[in-house]
Image (cartoon, rainbow, N blue to C red; front, side, top):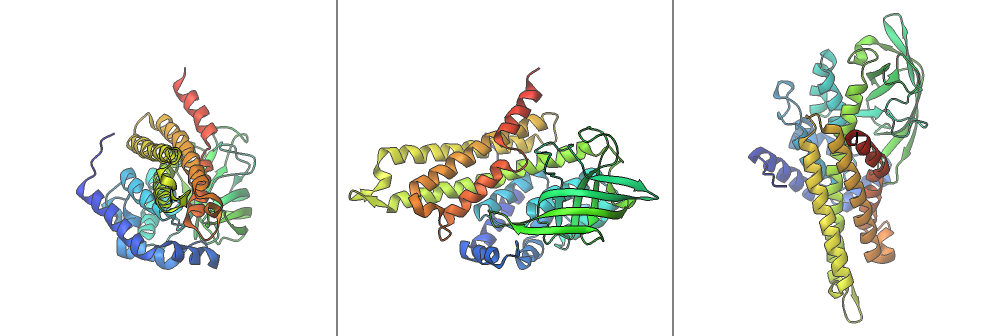
Length: 376
């Protein structure tokens, strides 16, 4: 697919890549991971104040750069090249996407705070029994007076340990698996009755199990109409899956580059292993998987505002998920035992690629979804 970026988009890519190249090397990332915070607030502030990338997909009326999904794709690919753990996906893509879709006073208030680097949003949507079904919800928001009382449990909430806002799906009507009756709320993360169990994820980020125990929230924290938020939830989940595909393009590109470099240096039987035909074929296959992932991610990104959105996203996520597995496993196999050590970056890229495979839908889930959407 031939796609030429605008001058502004090229500048965005170059700026992010240059900044991360100077300030976000593997050793500095590992220091942040080992500190256990799950992110670096100074880096996040720099994203806002030095680079301005937190405003990339927002309208100029909110103080943003006037971009959209393509800008998110560009930023996410660059973040993937450095396996950045700061919550751009959770805050800008998902939280910002939900606010843009819903509009209203809450969006007008919070979007500028996102752009300024002050608002950190965690998406509390997944539940232990729900798998990838966005409307399989036991969490409830019962109407009480002018507001709601929230009860339930959300699992694996990325950025949960340090978020100051929670984007929560809850049932305000209907049965557990009904498509209707789903509502979406953006609430402060420190409300009475919110209990967190924080932990580190295998890819170095931070996540939480979050429990809501009779949490009182006002109706002004609801995004969209009562009980009719599932289309917004599905939209932001598709946008998140596409952004993850872009991140995966950066991750797999670096896995291929590292493996190519290693094959040129590692010697067996008196010559570099890159001279062996089987290794050459493997490297070519890895390269092809990366390039196909880039092309299909771009296609899905360009279709996010079209009726073909869901099918395009599922096709891309399934293909990119396979690429993550193929490129990641071949990178580790070529490196041998050192490929999974903490000291070598390849192992951490492999972990991130593996996590991306399952986030917002596994390969099998998206293949089945694509089949449902395209086969009458």
